[in-house]
Image (cartoon, rainbow, N blue to C red; front, side, top):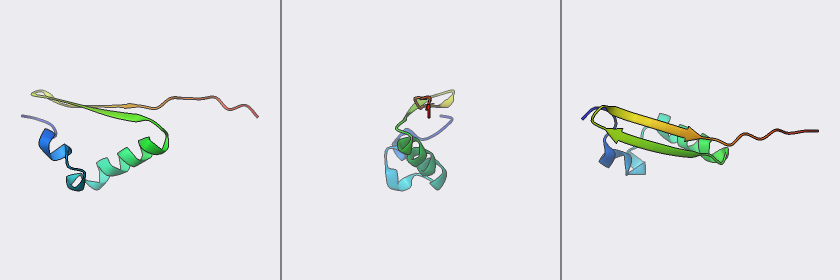
Length: 55
């Protein structure tokens, strides 16, 4: 199987610093992350709502 190991990604302590940092930044922005694992590879979907500020 190509891509990330599903079992490995389920344990937070085993995650690399890069992915942990991405998760933390997305959480700060109140976004969400989805991982889709398949034989073809891994797809990472990050959603962050955009708002417009007016002063």
